[in-house]
Amino acid sequence: MSTQTATSLQAEVNRLRLQLESLQAKDGSEPINVGDYLLARLEQLKVTKMFGVPGDFNLGFLDLVEDHPSIDWVGNCNELNAAYAADGYARVKEHSIGVVLTTFGVGELSAINGIAGAFSEMVPVLHIAGVPSISQQKTKPMLHHTLGDGRYDAYIKAAENFSISTAILTDKATAATEIDRVLTDCITRARPVYLTLPTNLVYEKISSERLKIPLSRLPPPNDPDTESFVLDEVVKLVKDAADDVVILVDACAIRHDVRAEVNELITKTGYPVFSAPMGKTAVSENYERYGGIYVGSISHPDIKEQVESAKLILSIGCLKSDFNTGNFTYSIPTARTVELHSDHTKVQFAAYQGIGMKELLPLLTARLERSAASNVTIPDFSAAVPNEADDVISQAWFWPKMGTFFKPKDVIIAETGTSSFGILDIPLPEGSVFVSQILWGSIGWTIGSTLGAAFAAQDVGLNRTILFIGDGSLQLTVQELSSMLRHKLKPIIFVLNNSGYTIERFLHGKHRKYNDIANWKWTSLLSVLGDQDGTLSKSYTVNNKEELSALLQDATFAKADKIQLVEVMMPMHDAPRALVQQAELSGKTNAYVAI
Image (cartoon, rainbow, N blue to C red; front, side, top):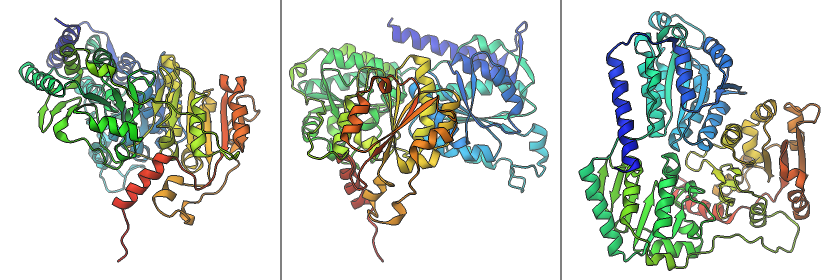
C-alpha cells in the first residue's frame, strides 16, 4: 500500500470517527467552553495569529484569545485590512489558515471585500463574526449595528455569497460539530468559511472529546475504477504525443497542496515546465527544466512557441482568468490538453468529477518514464539588466535590477497593476514565495497582506518580506503600516511614485484627472504612523538609477533589521511590457461605445 493511499485511508477513518462522535456522547472527557474549543482547533491547525478589530459582540471571546498561550491577537486598523492580512497569512503559511474576527454587522461588512478576494483566489480563511445572543436574535430588538428592520440574517445572507461553507451557531449541543465541519471545509476546499459566535455561547461548557480526533485536510479519496480509467487515458495521450509534453503549473497547485507531487512529476519525467502568472514560484524558478511564465499572447515569443507547439499540455491547477491568460489568448486546443484540478480531471473534452489531483498525480508519475523531452532545449529564464543611456528609473530597468537584490526564501509581494506585471519575467531565487492577487485585483490589498505574510514568514522560517506597491494603491490601506510598526515587523516596502493609477491610465483615460492622486510626503509616513522617535524604521527616496543601485548594494539596507520604505521616483506614463500588452487586449474587449 502506498504512503499516499494509507494517509488517505487514515483521513477517511478520522472523518468517520468525527461523524460517530456527533451521534454519541462519551463520559469522562474534560469539559471546555465553546470559545476555547474553537481556539483549540485553530491551534491544531497551526494558527498563531488572529486578525481583526474589537467590537462589543466579540469582546468576551477576545478575552480568551488574548489569554491563549500560542495564538496572538493582531489588532488591525480596520476590518478590510484585517481580512487582507488573514489572506496574506494563509498564502505564505501553507497547511494552515488565516483567521479574521469581526463584530456583528458593521465589522463583518467592512471585511467582506477581503473575504471575497480570498474566495476568488482559493485562500483558506476563517471569518468569525461575534453576534448578539440567541435570545436577541429571536426577539429582534432594534440593536445598534442592525438595519433597524429586524433582519438579523441580512449579514449571513451576504456572507453566504463569499463563503464555501457557513456555520450559524445556535446551540451548544451542536457547536463543536459545526465548528469542525466548517474548518474541515476550509482546509479541504481552500476557500473562506463563515462562523457566527453568539455572545451567550462563548463560555458555555461542552465536551472536549472531539478534540482528540484531528481534522483532515485531505480531500475525499478518488473512485478507484474511474481513477484507473483516467490514468490509462492520460498515459495513452502521453505516448501518442511521443513525449512532446509540456507541464503548465498554476495557482491551485499551491492552494491545494500538490507542490511536492508536482515536483516529483517534473523531475522524474524531465518534461519542460512553465507556470501561469498566478502560479509563479509554485515550481522552483531555478529548476533546470523551468522555462518561465506562459501568459497567452503576451508571453515572450520563445515561451509562447514552445508551449503552444507541444503535442500535449499537462495543466495542473489552472485558473483561466483574463489577467492570468493574456486576456483569454491561450492558443492551446482542448484536444491537446489534460487539466488536473483539486476535485476533477479533464482529459481533452471529457470531465471526470471527483477525481482529484492530490491522489492522481503520484499515480501518474509512477506510470511515466523519464523521456526524450528531457533533452529538448527550453528557453533560458533570465532577466538581464538593460544598459540604458539615461539615469531615469524606467520600468524596463527597474525589475531586472530588483532581481539582483532578491535572496533565497524571500517573500516577494506585488500589488495589482504595475508591480504584478513588472515582476513576472524576473526569476525569483530558490525557496522564495511570490504573493499577488491577479484574479480579484483589489488595489491596496498588499498592505494588509504584507502584514499577514510577514507574520507567516516568521512562523515558517522564511527570509525577508519585500513589498512593491504603487503610490495610488498605498493610499487605500496605508493605516496598516502602523500595525507593522506596533508588532515590530521588518518588511522592505518599495513605493513606486508615478503620480497615480498607472494600470488605469493604460486601460482608459491616460491623461484624465481621475487617474491622478495627491502626492504625499511618503518618507514621513512611518514616523507619523508610529515610529515617533525614528528607531523602528528608515525611509529613503531614490530619484535615479545611481541612487537606487547604491541603496541596493548597501549591506545595512539589505539586512532588513527594521521596517524600511523606499520611494522610487518613476515616469508617469511608463509601464512594464506585459501590462501595456494586457491593457491593449483588455481595451479591445471592454471598449466603450459612444451612443
